[in-house]
Image (tube, rainbow, N blue to C red):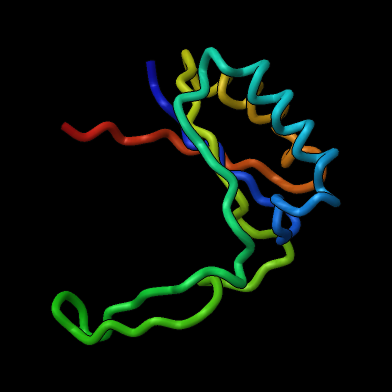
Length: 115
């Protein structure tokens, strides 16, 4: 069966904070309902904790880091699920049940299996 990454884009907040407990309850409910196909996933800390890495001049060049995300957006990449589904239609149906889809977005991408 193919595996899909379901990338969640939501408001950029720290989901560990108590004020988001209701939203986290909804994510936990989704996780329980879709447990048979979830192969992994996690929430991400806010973009303020991100470090962006670039190599100037290509391979072997100087490593340059900057604080923050690669791009500034209204909605940020805040987490992901790995879903093993029969096909894209099943992955889309599951993505629609992820709370991020209700006020943000969920991007579905097939995973390339190496080795």
